[in-house]
Length: 277
Ligand code: PLP
Image (cartoon, rainbow, N blue to C red):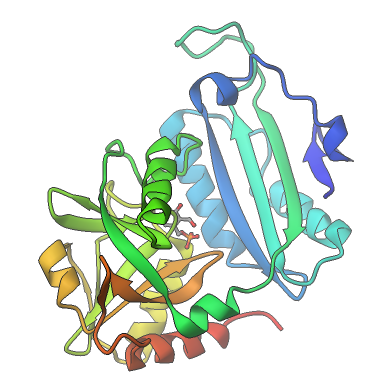
């Protein structure tokens, strides 16, 4: 992969991150994962908006404008030579001797690369298995920060329990998944947790809700419980890399018929129609 680092395009060996980087010490930084299709970035503006939201929340001054960042990302996509893939971008507060206060004079450290990643067509077709895991994250899950340890623990617990993804809940209220948002369908209505501090405001979530409304599928952005989750007709997850993926088993029990449901299928098709080709 080609990396954007130190305002140059370099190989991985030339990315020299200090052991005193605050990303390494504290997870003190922001990140984004962008998707590109046929060499074109998807929903760039929504990702940029969220990155600036995270940076404002972390009081991190981004060392580029939106236009500068966009052209860097486009250049990475070009240099990767890939048609479909991801761009990973992270910005830390920089390197300084280990101490909690924001360091004076440290410069943010930016690193990004594009890699070829195929669309998850198999999982989208057959669906995945999920299990409920307690959401032990902090109260600003709307910031896309490098502090992903609770997400890592939840994902590993899901895998250890023979599933693919963890559905997170706070005291029985479903929030989202370890690396995706979650939606249920009940009696034809699509329901998902509101975009507040308890979830990441997914770019894909917003696209899917827009598509559902345009198709006159009723949408409810209201919290729901684990019991409501268990009695849903359909469950699916949304995310930049998972797109719209059905959940066909929850805690070892079939969801609905045990096959991806009709509303999920419809939204998958409509989502696919929004992708650059
Ligand atoms: N929720 C979490 C915790 C995530 O890490 C992600 C990232 O993929 C999402 C939701 C989905 O967001 P997006 O659709 O912007 O990729």
